[in-house]
Amino acid sequence: MAIIGIDLGTTNSLACTWQNGRCVIIPNRFGKELTPSAVSIDEDGTLYIGAIAKERLITHPDDSIALFKRTMGSNQIYTLQGKQYTSEELSSFVIRQLVDDAKAYLQEEIEEAIISVPAYFNDAQRSATKQAGALAGIKVERLINEPSAAALFARSNQDEECFLIFDFGGGTLDISIVECFEQIISILAVSGDNHLGGSDFDHAIADAFCEENDLFFEDLSPQEERMLLRQCEEMKITLSQKEEVTNQITFKERIYSFTLSSRKLIMRAPDLFERLLTPIHKALHDAGRTPHDLDQIIMVGGSSKMPTVKSYLEMKLERTILNHNECERIVAMGIGMYAGIKQRAQDIKDLILTDICPFTLGINIHNESDPNNPYMHAIIERNSPLPSSVEHNFYTIHDDQKAVDIKIFQGESMYANHNLLLGKTEVKVKQGKAGEYPIKVRFTYDINGILDVDILDTGSQNKETLLITPAHTTMSEAEIEKARKALEKLKFHPREEDQNKLILSRLERLFEESTMEQREYIITLHKQFEAVLEKQDRIQIEVYRKKFEAIVDTLERELHPYQPTYH
Image (cartoon, rainbow, N blue to C red; front, side, top):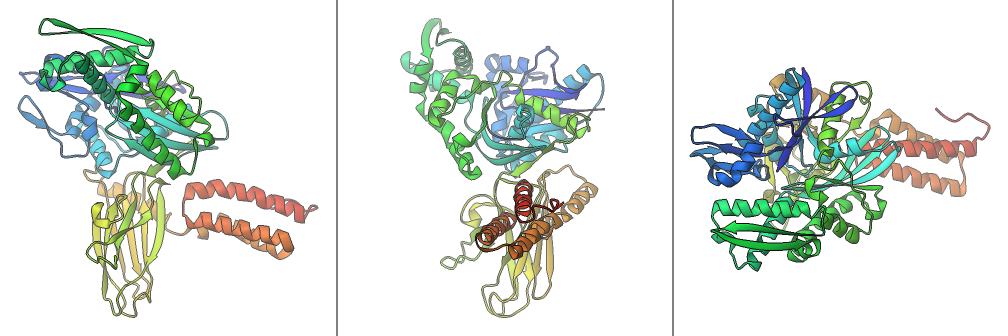
């Protein structure tokens, strides 16, 4: 029984596995690595997936569809041959095809698939991706963020590196800042645009073609539109090798011609190039990094091959970018490596790959100026590494208040009701003066999208718990309970962990043994480590604890040069 990784792309998808100490891309039935993410249905009900469906986008435009990943997790409905399909159902056809091709190639049953998703996918989109796997009849226990997979494959042997992953595919742009520290690969921040990809450049080229030839794209038939977009896609690809390309297309027995250069493309689509920068700046800001803090910028995805994209980014970021010759395969190869980790392959099993919470999780709090429009108070911030457990204190706002209504939201809006409501509960509280007794609210969130909410009124000791699982979850009650028990291990403040308490205790002892300027320095260190602990970011705490241990060891040697270093 094999475990495979699936890079479920907007325009193309790949399958990969780990064999004999290396990643192996699984060819499809046509012997190709890339399977177009396209679906078509014939009049007799025959279902076509991949290359044939892509060809039928032109010959049978009304019964063929692509780019449906863009609407994953939404209510979008597509109609093929009079029957309605969701994005999840269409994606399940592609997944099923990849699994069948893997079974034929590997000559064994497929036990499980690990599927990649953009790091900024929200709960609904991730749930929809898992649902697609379930509809395809394959176990999907784990989703992996695409930049995590890319960093896993691309990381070098250096102890510490910081990457910007620029994942630019046919339909989406995914930006991530990834830090590698020893055996830990951690996402620091993510951003993206799920409506910006190579297909948008195809449309921009098509618009320029129509303008120069006195045509209107909207006046073309569906078949002519698909023909033109296919030609524009080919021109865009050719620009990866040439400075200029000329193409011809025949509509209604008339030949139309168009010449395109890299410079002309930038002039024709300035808004698309500007949109490339927005998520980059956002991700860098959230990660607390600048372009010059990066060790590498890794270009991922077929659209990142466009020379105009690379040169534009180099100009705006003032950085040299080295092209990776595996840009279309990096994510798939990384997922294949993760399949090896999950199978406990001896050569990579010790790597730790962390995911992040792509959207902020929080609760409603009182808005004094507009009580009917409560504010959103963040508990687990976006870009927090998972699993994560964070506790905050809240207080009643009225004397003799009997209960508090707590609603759990996901999103970035300042006002709670503008975000996605995940759940709600009521907690009875001890009556007293407003703000007399803290109400402790703890969120514990794991990589499977399970959110465990614990609420404790310290006055009455009344406690409420709320378990929020992803929609369309395929986990059984036993699996959910197992995950919940695992989360219990996280439910205490990092300040209470022995390793962290030891650092603080050593600093306090060294303070007593020191004088003057050394004491000021030790107080500063103590405050800095307290600040790190207060953020309750366990990955960063581990990173900083190693650094603080080295500093404290140095202080020990300075104060006690003839004693062995503390261990």
